[in-house]
Length: 113
Length: 113
Image 1 (cartoon, rainbow over the protein chains, first blue to last red):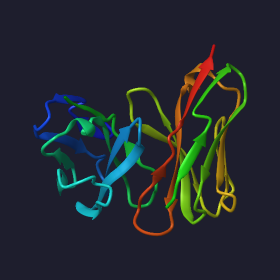
Image 2: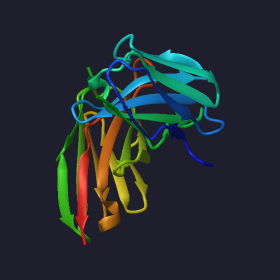
Image 3: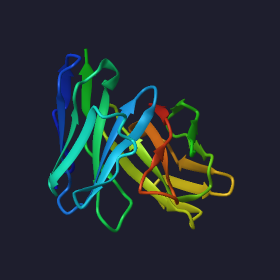
Image 4: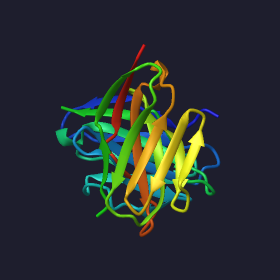
């Protein structure tokens, strides 16, 4: 298994631009999580899906952030418009139904200038 | 509000030493606790998961203990090796609400050869 796949690995953009981060979970996993990691705030859960349905989006910082999971093998996290304070590493993770063990992707390092 | 603290923030030890990493949490109402390892530029890898009813879990040279009533967990690493150098994070899953782990800020470990 290739594990959780995220793209792009690095993204540099200018303030005000739209950013889309992508994630492919491990096949057969029915939970998908989006996290953000910064030096100041550590690792924070933004949103998670179960069977493609958003369950808890209380960690999404504001309306500029949105996430979708159109099918079991693909999810996106979109920021529009982006701001410098959105600069962080964004992780996607997935897990199966019968375990709490999450498998993390390598992350996307986002820099907003 | 659940808060997770890890002390020390950084630790440097010579190879071969046994060491203990500490994690404390403010609310004892947890479902389980996990310890993760994060290598630079990579995602997290789950090391050990302790259910709230358990006192400890072991995997190879790693042993994690949980004292829920006092809000503490420790990760014991025996005979440390340079390959153990990484950041170690603990995370708790509260019993209330949705599936959502609260992460500590981590302990950055360096094992010197």
